[in-house]
Image (cartoon, rainbow, N blue to C red; front, side):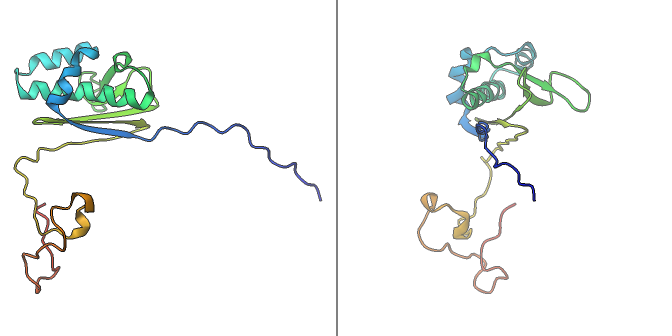
Length: 174
C-alpha cells in the first residue's frame, strides 16, 4: 500500500483584515477635509449642494470613508482615490463607491443630518446611518435588546401592554 509523504505546511498566508466601520459626528470629521484630495466629481457634487448641513454631511462622509480605508490598509488617507460607479447606467459620478487601484477592498459610506458612517474591508461591505432625531425608542424593550453596559436602568423594563399581552413586552416602533 503506497503511502503519501507527510504534508509539510508552507508559510501561512497573511490573514485578511477584518472589516472596519466608523460612525462619527459630521463636525468631528470636517477638520480632516484638508488631509484628503477629493476627486473632481466629488468637488462638483459638493459645489452643487447648498452650503450648510447637507454639504457638510456629504463632504464628511467622503472624508471618513478614506480614513476608514486608510486605517484598514495602514496607509495615509491622502493616497486613496475614491471613485463611484453606477451599476445601472455606468455613470461615474454616483453609485457604489470603490477605491481606484484597489479592487479587493470594498468601501461604503452613508450620511444623514449631523452624522456620517463609513466601512472598509476585504470584499464588499455596506454601512448605513439613519436620522434618529424623530425616532421613538421604547423604554419597555426587553433587557436582551440593551447591552448591559448601556442599559438605561437595572432590572426588567416595564411592560406597557400588561401581563395579559400576547408577548408580555413592548412592541418595536418599527
